[in-house]
Image (cartoon, rainbow, N blue to C red):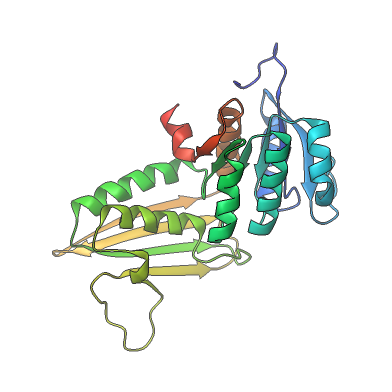
Length: 266
């Protein structure tokens, strides 16, 4: 399904976590975007309307979904909630876009099971700049096979998971192209007598103020340093990307997708 026009029915979006930072951003962006309509919004706690959209209790989501019949669900919540929403979407046959991070292996397995029934697009970050950063990081890591690697991320003081989902994705990108590096070699912060050992990647998570999101990958060796950095100045970047993903996903077949698929199809 393509994004609606003045002569077409709008794409009807359901939003979970409507009272959270990203849920609000998604609703506000969808209300302002031509060709989209927010058909349903839910939150775990009682929430006033967002951008004129009424917010229903989250425990009514599974019942409301088949009644409302949205074209796609956009989720930014927590791992437990996102898994429950994914199961409800699979039962109702509604595509799911989720930007939730912090899943454990069992929860990821449940999401992938849902993708057997519906299209599921999971991304740690919906910024097009981050998509470009990931590609640059993979190319740089492959071109500098002996370089030491450090990954640093900074977020607002209310972010719960550390490292961020985006930082973990960047780490996986490096490990995919560097046979000498693996998750077992990740060192989270340093303290005391802690010189670098072969096979290590340093990982640093900072939480301060209202920082929207910063990610840096540092590669150093052979008397040279390469720093690849992305800074997000506003959460609207992520909301816009999530809605791009929702429009793209709405008419896809069941399966597992990521934001790179959206970028590649542009």
